[in-house]
Every structure is written in structure tokens, then in C-alpha cells.
Amino acid sequence: MQSSGQAVLKPTAPNEGLLDVAQMATGVALILFMWSHMMLVASVNLGSGVMNAIGAFLEDHYLAQLGGPAVALLFLIHFALAARKIPFRPKEQANMWEHSLRLQHTDTWLWVVQAFTGMAILVMGCVHMWTVLTNLPITAGKSAFRIQGGWWLLFYMVLLPTVELHVGIGLYRIGVKWGFVTRAQRSYVKSLENRVTLAFIVVGALTLITFYFIITAVPKP
Amino acid sequence: MERALKFNIFRYNAMDPRSVPQMQTFYLDETDSMTLFIALNRIREEQDPSLQFDFCCRAGICGSCAMLINGRPDLACHTKTKDLPAEITLMPLPVFKLIGDLSVDTGTWFRAMNETVQSWIHTDRTFDPKATEERMSNEEAEAIYELERCIECGCCVAACGKANMRPDFMGAVAFNRIARFITDPRDKRTMKEYFDVVGTEEGIFGCLGLLGCEDICPKHLPLQDQLGMLRRKMGWTAVRHLFDGLLGKTA
Image: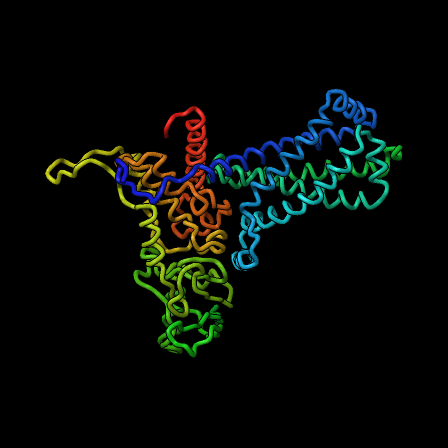
């Protein structure tokens, strides 16, 4: 019995709280990274010279060689933390699915989308990072070669909306879960988030079009 | 215009070993200002006296008539049939123990929840029955009253994805209770003591933030804001606990 009279069986370890804080922090860091990443890749729309200059800068300052693996590590840590919330037992999955179908509630569906896109990004993100980071430096010609091969275009046409949905929904959910977004602000933030997500998908699609049709492909040496 | 309403109602008598869970169809002519309370009573009086469902106040105060109305938890007594399509499916609330048909035992669950969060004011002060009542600011009293409006109907628990997956999850109603005592200046519990109750995977850190509770609550309690506040306060307590440990301070 403690001074105020609150009785507990045993003091709670702070682990769950720290893991939840870490999940949010890694999520925010990855959101910022993904937005910067999209901006840097979209620089190819201004000409391959611009993208090549950025690629060379990253290479010269070891941001690609060290930053790339660091982001990959952050990505895996975020997965391990977020996976605590994903139901892996078939019974829990069935309960959640039946609940979602029954309730027909937007934010419940957003979470389902978040869980599915998370699993897809785990696989596709690893494939993407491995391909890019084992073929440094990043140049517009090498990226165009990949996209113009055909299958990679299909791969990125799936990965682009998957990532942008996960990032957009994730940011909105961090806001409401941690109380940064209040009841009064929720619908505004949600619609703003939808527009931001759509804008990034459009920029990404334009970039893919540029890589496919405009940039001269440079095969692997 | 008068509609012919079709009701699909879940039937199962847990006390009868021969009973098999099934949906049963009833038809009823809609009347003016008909609520589901009126409809279900008419079905029981005119068509099947064995139909089980719970009602008490019929005014959205007692919380006993919560059920799934076309899949969404709500109070039957304040749901008007004119706001629903002509075909209405009624199921008992999930998560809670089924008594029979649409009747569930929310009492046992709520008793356990209130015991877990120790839903009373914790203070070391001795109560003096002869003393004048202590004053409290109007803002504080109103903030507490806003959270006290909960009628413990169970809709937020039924609308919660996590509670549907994990029976040991505390649910929004418990977080609202904790928030109510954090708001109350008479409760002397420290954040660490609240953390011991709610800073767990069964507590606020297990919450997925789906906001089914917020969007479903028939009393429109500000659950999103309470859950957000609680997660922030408990997250901060965890971080502080870590730093105190690293700096060698005892919590």
C-alpha cells in the first residue's frame, strides 16, 4: 500500500511506455526521411543533371554509404516496434477482420491499411534498399535503366502508393493517438493529410513517368 | 409513409443446451417516432415472448440497452427506426458475456474494470463529516463532470478493435475513468501510481488509436482527447523513469 492508497500487485516496468515512445519517434523520423527522399528523387524532373549532382553530394559526404544503412536499421527497428501491435495469431486476425467489416468505421479501416502496407513495405522496402545501396552512386541514368526494364516500373507503381498511404495515415494516427491533434482539429487534419498524401503520390507518379520516358538509361557497368 | 420493417435478430439461449445460435426474422409496421425500444417490446408482446433484451430507463441514461444495430454499437432506446433502413439487424454487444439473445452481462466486466483502475478518490486525509464542504473551482468541477457523464453502456468497448482481439484490454471507459481522477485535485495518486495501473500493454500503450470509441460513444464523451492526454502523460512518465534510472535516482 502506498501513501495515496493505490494498491498494485507490482510496480510496472516502464518498458511498454518506452517502446511506444520509440515507435512514435522512429515513425516521425522515417516520415521526415520519406518526404525528403521523395523531394530528392523528384529533382530528376528538373533534369538529370540536378539529380546527379545531389547523388554525387550524398556520395562525397558519405551520406549514401552511411546514411543508407542507418535508415535501413531505423526501418527495421520501426518494424519491430510496430509489429507489437499487429495481430499475428489467426484468431486475433479473424476477430479484427470481422470487427472491421461489422463496424464500417473509417479510422478502423485506416489501421487495417496501415498493418497491410507495413508488411508490404517491410518486404518491398528491403528489396529497394538492397538494389539501390549495392549500386552506388545514385544517378538518374541508373535509375532510369531500372525503371525502363519494365518489372521495376510495376514494382514502384505498387511501392509508391503503399509507402505514401503508410506515411500519411501514420502521421495522422500519431497526431490523434498522442493527443497532438484534438477532437476539434481531427477532421481538418485528416483532410489535410489526405491532400498531402495525394500530392506526394502525384509527384512520385510524375517522377516515374520522367524516368520511363525522358531520362536516358545508363546500363550497369 | 408507413414502412414494413424487417428485423434480423440474433437468438441464442445460453441456458438451454438444445439452443443453437441463429438469426431470426420478424416483421413489424413502423409507427410514428418508433424507437428500437418500442419495436423490440412490440415484437416480444405480439410475436415472441421468449425474446431477451435489456432495458431500464428508456431515456439513454442507464446504459443497459446497448446492442449492435446494423453492426454499430448504440443504445436501442434512443435509436429511431426512421433513421435506419427498412431492414435492421440486431446483435448482442461483442466482448461481453452473453446472457441470451440481445442481453449481455456488462456488470461483471465493469465491476472488474472499476476494481482494476480503483475507481475512487485516493487520499490520506481523514474525512471530517462536521467540516464545511471544501470549495472547488467551477472549471475543475465542470471538467470532472464532463467525464463523469459516462453511463457504462459498453459501446466503446464493443467498438474497440483491440478489445475485440484481446479480452484483457482495459478499454476507453477505463482510460476515461483514470482521466477523471487525474483531473480531480482531491485524488492524491502520483503519475507513477497511475502509470502502474494504466501504463501497460493492457492499458493505454495497447490502445491502437482506432477511435471507434470516440466515434461511437452515445454520450459523446471527449474520449479522443482523454486517450491522447493519458498516452502523453504515461509516455512522459516512462521516459522520466528511464532517465531517473540512468542518473541513479530512485523513482
